[in-house]
Image 1 (cartoon, rainbow over the protein chains, first blue to last red):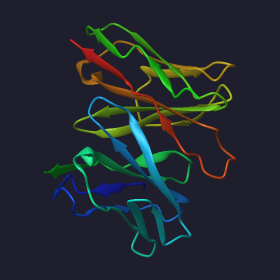
Image 2: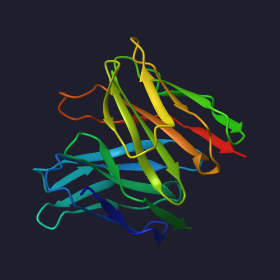
Image 3: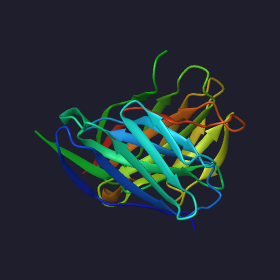
Length: 110
Length: 115
């Protein structure tokens, strides 16, 4: 079946790098996504990666994809307090719908 | 370009009532998806509409229904509300199937509280 898993919490110091990990089960996924949710808000698309890519960089964000292990990670360089939020990994499943992980709550301490 | 608009932002209902939530997609987007978000279950897919037809459906009881209009606006309805229906209901829009990357753009959600 389709399932996406993430660790629930991550705490880092301001200025450090954050790495949020995600595993998924659907090997036919074509695209994988990272979304950010701030309190009281909807989900904001941060970045995405096509399944035939290993890495994608977008300013402070780096996405790494290991398709063999079905492992996706999001690295945020120079993490700021404004990056504190919940981060969701999502895969586009076989039937075209997005399947989300439980979300990782990132806490950035000054 | 305006984003995805959901109304109302907050809603309080009592058990047994019914509720209708509305979603206006980004201009040009023809696909609308609905998700339920709760602290315990996370984000769960409800259904997706494209060109007024339901394209995908999640594992929710028949009390949850939706529809899409010719202008791509969508509504979802929950009948005979239960306490467990309390959640943030999120709507997302995209250009639809057949596009190279169906990026979903989300609204701010409707927070439903069932008392």
